[in-house]
Length: 72
Image (tube, rainbow, N blue to C red):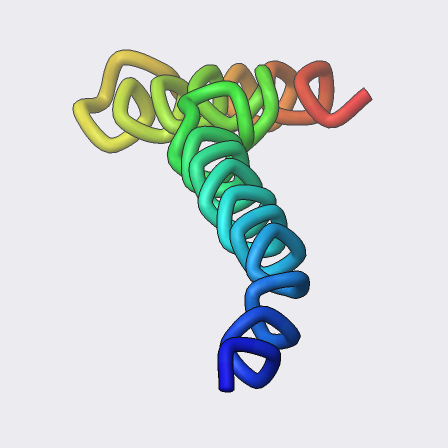
């Protein structure tokens, strides 16, 4: 009678390992996707440049010159 319960217990550690790998992988994925650096270093600079242009701090030529410099 006890043999049937013992057979299924042998695979329990595999499922526990799979569970923890998924949990840790999910944490790493969330930290990577939601990190400010995930967008790249130039996205923040490009957003700031767009905001300055919208406020009228930069003319069209200066905006294009700086935007092209960020693209490289």
